[in-house]
Image (cartoon, rainbow over all chains, first blue to last red; front, side):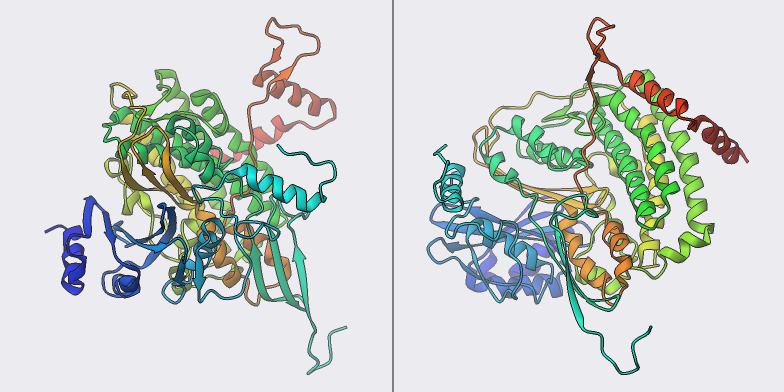
Length: 167
Length: 417
């Protein structure tokens, strides 16, 4: 049994609900899907027991009705586990994972800014990467967001309409 | 006059940036000081956010190769390689070996120019400007080779989906070998300086401490992590291209400070020369690219690359069309910037520039081939060549009494000894 299969079997043994939801894509690449309720337990188990000691980044996806969140965690032997769950777009609330990986702070701020995910448990701090005066409810990485809509509205509010024409 | 015993210094918060003469790129730092001691440090990033991930979704894969290459002005090849190898995996393309070797050669040459650039900046930040002058002059050797191989000093445009765009000829290989020999000699000289020059050693030692445990828990990457004895390098841990065939040795150090970061980068340069020689000597014959489909089958790929500053990752999700559904990029500086607050704890304000510079933050100092219109129009194309600009520059300085050829001769003699 390869290392990747061992990890897969280890996860299925601990979390039987993962059966059929975890796949070895190729050498050193595993993908797994879970529901939001079970995510934290699997995430913590992968870090503490399976050697996934580093969080590469968090990818946010606009999937139409839901927002997908993929946590890319890695081991020192190069194996990556892409662990995914989805949240409803009308109530996109997730928990911060800073107690497991302090670095998740900046990645969570990024998905909060760009996709409008609300992250519970993030300490006070600067937003990233959008400017402080970025309009509310404008999330650039959502599929229905187009650059024009925000350029005209910020230009109007900043210049109070003086000399600014619609693009 | 020193403050009376028991008298507490009032804390002062100093904002540095986003526009500040000491910064090469917009970033904002808030430094809380008690006297000269740094009590707290916070960074505000994002001033250079250009919306490239969103822009990628609206362009084709072919266009995106050129777009992602422009994420960085220094390690541009890391992004285009990371992106193309992900798309190739999605399309299940069998990329020719020769193309992968050429990618490695360009990637390692890029590492040389990036590390030499860093060495110069580090020298400058600690007031050792001779080191800046020397290392940036030597960097021109590798910049010339990159321009010769790809047509550009940065943003090489060598990668295409399915392989590379330009082949290496016999004379290219000779020039690469010659350049690597020269640079290796120079690097040995810098290693000599870094290990014997007491002023430099004392200036860098104990500055910007990042203990091993903190490097691990804060998720540091690249030379920043390796200087805290974290033996991680994607070229060995998760080998891409042909690194598994070339053999690779991770360079680490246990100084845990700016001095260690200097030694790691210099050590990595020596390893890079070995890798380039191995790649050039084992360069297989054959085609340099395969034809790639315009539409990429549905799927998702997580691609990793060891950039000069650390791990660079691209996540790509495809939807069966000619445009990606999602492109996510995490450049190494984002992982390293959090370690700066730890490194600056209880440090002197005067150490702040070198500590920030020591993670080698990715300031976009894009350097490009210059084409200048000749006002006399003496040549038929009306363009001054690079060599002509260089000889014009040497002549100009000589007329002002500055002659670098004497310095070059002295250095060459010293290297022979």
